[in-house]
Length: 189
Image (cartoon, rainbow, N blue to C red; front, side):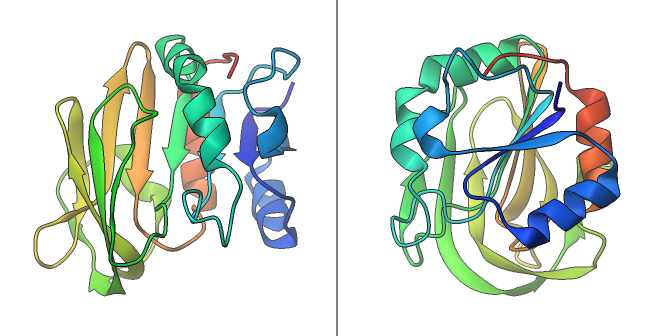
C-alpha cells in the first residue's frame, strides 16, 4: 500500500524526492481522484498551480471530492496543499472543510518561525520563494510567516487528520515527507 499520493502528472523531480524519502507513493491523475478503487494513503500532496488551468486540471476534481477530502481528514490523513498559483488574485479553498484564503504575490522572503510544529520541516531554508500568502480561518495555526508577518505555512486539524497548506514554492523536504507519512493514518481519499 502506498503511503503518499501526489495528485497530478508524473515528474522525474518528484519521483527522485519520494525515492529519497523511502516511502511508497503513487501519482494519481485528476480524472481518478476520489475514485473508490484507489488504495488508502497516509498523505495526499496537491502540488503548486492546482487552481491555474495553465498548469493543472486538478481543481474540478478537488471540488467534486469535497466530502471525500473531509472523510480522508476525519480518518487521520494528512493533506499537504501548495499554492493555487493564481498570481495577483485571491483564492478561497472552498473544497476544504476549514476556511482558508490565498492572496497571490510572488517573491522571495525570509521565513519567520511562528511555532515549533514539526510541519515546519517542509522547507530547510531560512528564505524561500513564495507565490503568495495565506489568511487562515478558525482551526488553523500559522507555522511559518513571511517578513511582514503573513502566513506562508499553516496547519489545521480536522477530525484525526491534518491540513498543511503553504505558499512556499519549493518541493517538500525529505524530512517533511517522512514526518507526514508517520503522522498520517491510512485513509481513503
